[in-house]
Length: 392
Length: 223
Image (tube, each protein chain N blue to C red):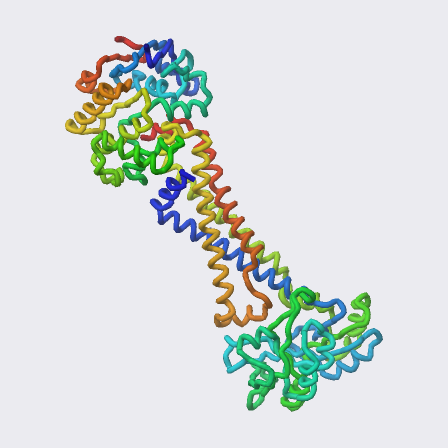
C-alpha cells in the first residue's frame, strides 16, 4: 500500500494517457455489461415459456395474419386442451412511444387459464370476463402510470388494420402480480384485453397474429404441432407451430444466435482493449526506464519493481471497470426512455444490470489491466540496472 | 580498517565474438571515512568500478567487499536489500523522479524501511534541511535549478544514513557556483558525518577537494 502514492502519481502525471486508457477500458466493460444484460434478459424471458403451450403463426412471418376460424379447427384436435388468440396490438398510450408497454388482444378466459403465472384474484377475473372493455395490466405497468383497479385509459394501435376513428377505451379490471420464484421470467409489464373488443371495433377486419394452444401432454408437443400445421398446409395462410420456448427463442434472436453474436462482439472489443492497454503500459514503462533503474539502484528488488508496474496496470483496469459498470448501469436505466431504441428494449422484462454480470465485467477489467501489464512488468523485472541507466 | 576492498577485479564485456576488457585486475582499498576521487579519461572504467562497488553490477572475476559484505556472494534480492541499507548513489544527471516533489524523492528509499509515513516525512524534511533545501520540499524537480536538484539527490542518497556514498561525476552537469556548493556539501558529509565517499570525476579541481586521488587508465589503476 505504501507504494500506491507512487503509482497514483504516475497515473496522474500522464493524465491524458491514463484518461484515454480508462475510457477505452470503460467503453469495453460498458459494452460487455450492456450486451450481457440483454442476453440475460432474453434468457430470462425464455424461462417463463411453458412446454405445454404451443404457438401457431403464419408460416411466412408473424406480420401476416391468419383467419380467426383457425381457432375452432385447432381446438378440435385430440390432445388440445385450450386455444386462445394472442394478437400483438401495438398500443400507444397518449400517442407517445416513450410510454409504450406491450398489449395483447386475447380470448380472456382461455388465455388466463393457460397462464397461471399471472396472479389474479377471483374478483378481478370475474370483472374482466364481464366487461368487453375490461383489461388486465401487469403490476410494473400499473406502478409506472399510477393506475389502480377501476381506472380507465385509452390506447391507439400503430398497426394500420387495428386503427379506428377514435382510440380504444379500456377499464382496468385487475392488476396481475408475478411470482418470480415459482414462475421465473414472467413479464410484469403486459396488458391483455378481449380479442372480441378488437374484432368488433375493427368491423371484424382484425384477423389473428398468433394462436396459443395448451396441450394435455407436453410429450405430444411435436406431434400436435405437426398436426396443426397439416390442417392448414394447403390453405392461403399456412401455419408454423412450435413450442412457446422455441417461438420466443426464434423471435428474440431474429433468426440468429443472438447470444453468440453479442458475446462475440464483447470478446472482440475486450481483446482490442487488451492490446491498446498493453501498448499504453509498454510505452509508459519504456519512457520510465531510467526511473526503474533508479528504483533498483535505491534497493527496490526486481520483484518489487514488477509489483509496482503490475499495480499500475491493474489500477487502470479497476478504474476502467468501475467507470464502465457505472456507465452500463445508468445506460440500461436510460435506454427504455430513449426514442427508437427505447421501443425495442421496453419489451424485455427485468432489464437491469445484475450483480453477477457487474462482477464478471469488473473481474474482466481487472484481469485485462493485469494481463496488459505482464509483459512490461516482466521486462522491468529482468532489466539490469546498468542497461537501464545507460539511457541517461 | 578498509570500508571498501576491491581485489583483483576483472570486468569483461562481450560484443559478439569481441571481448572488451573494461577493468583488468584492479585491486584497491578505501579506508573507513576516506574521500576518494577516481579520475581517468573516458572509457577508462571509472563508472564500471563505481557500479561494482555500489553492487549494481557484478565483476567477471575477483571480489568486492563493502562494509564487511562480499557483494559477489549475494543474490540479486540480497544485493538490492544491501544497497538500500549501505550505499547512497549520486548521479551526474541527478535522476530524481519527476512526478514526486523534493520531499517525496528524498523519502523514496525510506519506503523500503519499516518507518511510518510520518516518520518518513520527518526524516526526509530533516535531510532536506541538512542540504539547505527545507524551503523547497514541495517543489518538483522541474521547479528546481540543477544545483538544487543535485542537493535533493544527495539528500536522497544520505537519508537512510549509509556508510558509503558513491558519486558519479556529481558536478559534471553544473555551473561553477553550483558545483562548488555540491563539493562543499560532500566535504561536509565526509568531515562531519564521517561518510566514506568515492567520487568519479573528470574535473581536476573537484578531485583536489578529495583526500585521495586515484587514476585509472584502460582499466588499470595507475596511481
